Amino acid sequence: MTAVTPIPKPTPRKTPPELDALRAEVEQVNFELLALLSRRGSLVTEIQRVKAREDIPTFLPDREQKMLADLVERNPGPFPSAAIRRLFHEIFRASVDLMERERDRVLKVSRSFRREDLVVQVGERAIGGAPVVIAGPCSVESEEQMDLVARALREHGIAFLRGGVFKPRSSPYSFQGLGARGLEILARTAHRHGLRTVTEVMDPRSVGIVAERADVLQIGSRNMHNYDLLREVGRTRKPILLKRGLSATIEEFLWSAEYIISEGNENIVLCERGIRTFENATRNTLDVSAVALLRQQSFLPVIVDVSHAAGRKDILAALARAGLAAGANGIMVEIHPCPASARSDSHQQLDFAEFAVFLDEVAPLLTARAGAASRPGRTPTEPA
Ligand code: PEP
Ligand code: MN
Image (tube, rainbow, N blue to C red; front, side, top):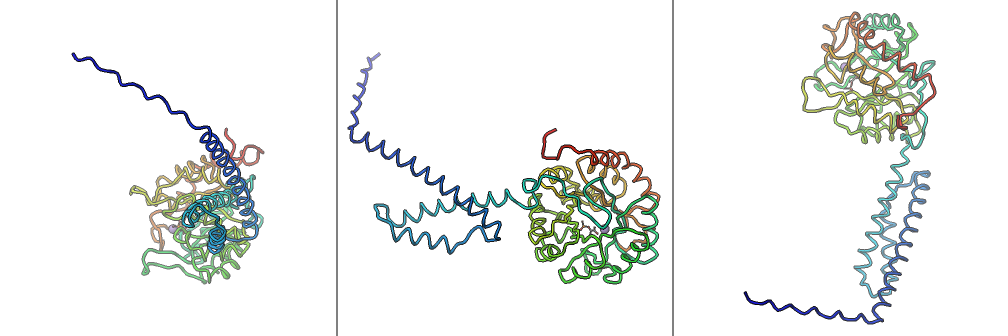
């Protein structure tokens, strides 16, 4: 074995005291820059609060360009202009991120904006306190049909009558609803029986007539992203039932509600109606998590449309119970005097006997939630 000669350790060079001093000074500058950046962060957050109040956009590219040009002009060196641009561009980006965070934190539909649950008043009725049932046919088809439905609702003490008159159908050749004539039938029926109506509005140009004749304006799932329509209903002061888009995230859903509230109308009821998934045993998949999360993140009432979620009759009561247990403020369900002959969604509508069984099966949850609603207590933001 050959002996290994140890490599002598290099004797550490002594740092010149001048370098130590310069390094210390650079570190001090870092801390000063950090303090300045923090000050900038606080200022832009404050700016965002004013912008939100005055409805001014968060990001103004012209202003950013001007600030960059001024900085380059005043650049004393030694950093070249390109480096100054790059550095400040990063600072501006981080500042916009901060402002966007601040903007989202104060979403007008969020619980951080308003802590207490909102109760949406619909005439002498309300959605948001004790849970409600909204029932009626998929489509308004005739005066006789609506009269029979209204009688069934009254028999069960239900105040909200639904019925589509402008129908969003996948095929342009399917029944599109009775339109204005249907709206009149719906309004007359409700008036005769002392009920409140819910009906869909699809076109910003129809908002006026629907707002005049119906109590609650429904925005259908397919129109959740129709921002012109959202703004238009936001300009009314009518209660709006906003359905979640077929493939919308919870965040996108809340943004759509924000469109409505940003126009000054806070009378919004959110409706979870199932989302598209790979599962085909049901028409859609009822997202129960969304119910719990929406109740936690927003003060708006949430209801669950079990009919469009399931697309079948046999699990409607189970879905309604699940929705109510997760915190829903109400249930929407489709009923028809003779589902087999319905002009739309015939296989998912309950006849009156089935409806009575459905209500029996859901009653314990409705009663429990009604009891909880009358007791002052926790809001869904607080841990149990
Ligand atoms: C409806 O409620 O009539 C309807 C069409 O539902 P959705 O928009 O949820 O499909
Ligand atoms: Mn339907």
